[in-house]
Image (cartoon, rainbow, N blue to C red; front, side, top):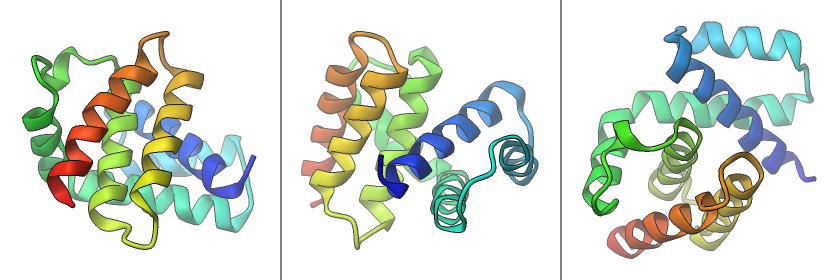
Length: 134
């Protein structure tokens, strides 16, 4: 597994913790890295994703609400919601990452951490968003 995938998986776990426990992002990252230390590259990219999602959450969530037909964010599974947030952040702000890579990574992470339907759900929502922001 590559460092970027490790970073994305760590970011998902941190965002999940923030979502459920209402911990402050800096505290959630600190606790996570204390229990699951990694390389500097992995930690840096994961922290960038978490910071970016948190800092741009209103805009990211608005885009998700607008493009997830018949789904409110509050009704989505916590894992799916945070995978989508991470991917939308990457699509909007990480211009060095090709959209196809972001979509593929999100789908693969959804298959690993989500339900049987998560991969298809994530793919459908992100495909709509990617077309809208290109």
